[in-house]
Image (cartoon, rainbow, N blue to C red; front, side, top):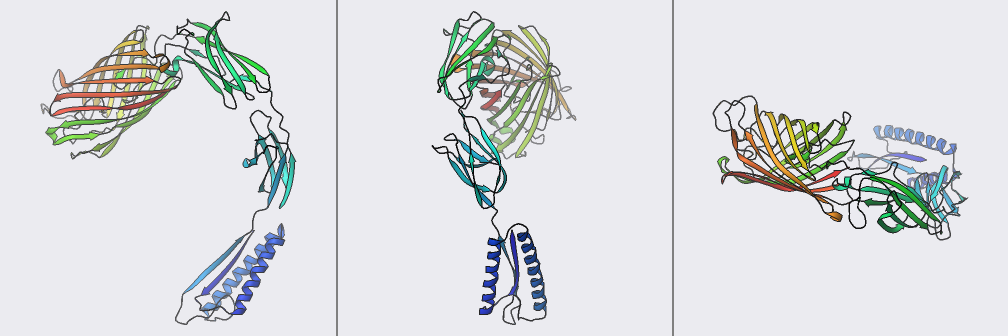
Amino acid sequence: MRYTLLMRTKTFRQTTPVVQLALFLLLGFVLVSCATGSGSAYSSSVSGDESAAARAAAANRADDDDDDDSGGWSWDSDDSDDSDSSTVIVIEAPKPSCTVYVTGLAPGAGVFVNGSWLGKADSAGFASGKTEAGLARVEASLFGHEDWDAVVELPSWGSVTLQAYMPARPFGLAPRLAAAPRFDPGQPGLGGTARIVFEASARGSWRASVRDEDGDVVRLLGTGAVGEWPVTLSWDGRDDSGNQLAEGRYVALVEGEGQDGRHSSIELPVRIERAGVPVRASTLHGGFGGAMLAPDATVLPDLRFQTAAGLYAFVDSDLSSGEDFATRAPAWAGFRAGGLFGGLAELALSVMGVPYFGSTATVSPSSVSVAGSFKTGLVDTGAFAAALLVSGAWGSFTDPDAAGWPAAWDGPARFPGLGATFVAEARAGRSRLFASAEGHASTFYPGYDDMAWDVPGFFAWAYLRAGAEALVPLGAAGDLTLAASAAVRTEPLGGGAGFRDPLSVAAELAWYVPDSPVVISALGAGEWRGFNSWYFAGGLAAAFAW
């Protein structure tokens, strides 16, 4: 309910006692109406008073136009003072409320009314609080007890007492996984562990073990307390002596005892299946699947998904362009998704932004580029694999009008255009040797300054890269991968045969955090043409692999 009083006044020196008395009586009448009226009488009173206020305001404006300062809501003022103002008084009536009392609750239970918090039950199982009147749903919940709810009509400006019933739940264990875990202990990171997740209906304790098909215990997974949150256990496929177990079926047995003395147990089947090929996480720096400068021939299987982000410092010295130790800090983020086209291809996409520091060259102070690729496998025998990537990029942190920027043609640099890459790798256990050949077409060729021929509308050239990567298991500390590579580039098509210096080198160290989807990478890349032309880039990246 709301009353609105509109008063139009001129500036006044003093208020007559008669006017003060009239205002006092009017305000008293409004307050009495708020306290005693209800239902439709409120609506009718509000409508009538608002109409009366509007008519009074209109009459006052007419009186003001006639320079008649008597009556209405106006006071005497100097004739030379023509300023006036309008005053609106809004009186909001409080919404009808009701006090709710609930007894019979489990001590500590939370009580809600229409989803809003009302209170917490004390040690005697009692809770109370005020809430809006009307039809309401009152609920109470506490882990280890049955939920309680009631739908009631809460009276206006009154109270209601409700009797709850929240019996204790019997202790029991239940799995949280819909299917039996299948995993390959040879995979790095989270892909090389089985996740065993279970929950309890009430508080208690648990102990877990892994048994083989004969029922013999091969691994003790520990003990602990269980409450309202699920418990997650990890098994790396090893026995208690640290030996890697063979492929086959196993059972994770979880036994528990509740505070009520009840016992419960569940069996969760687990299967070890060796895929043979480690599925590595990617920093997604270049917009394709693989390490920063080490593309791989493995297509991400199933519907797996990865995300990554990184940042590194980029320092170079190019005295020919008048720049000395200009610095940039490329930052990027992207994703990688597998299982496309029936598992035949994967998609990778990344976005990079690069601010410039200490630069006086004619370059954009910051810029953004987008790169992505589709990759499909051509052959995979286990010991040898090959894949084809079709890639594209939009934008770059280079400026074609600024000579010598960047000194880097590889690694941090990304150029607009299209490309196709053939990747081949030979595998030996957890290590691999890889090589790639990429053809690229762009409107800009890095470092093109020999003036041997007119600059065309676009450039086409090739990258050649080779390197090695090793995956080292660290046991309880997770897994570690180390990749190193070197690359050369050809002269632009039509600009002569042969390769153009300098040689580019790069390295990446990746740590797979144990029992976690997180992969943290340290990156390094550099080129050297001479004392007046070189660069180095180093930084960190974090990936999340599911």
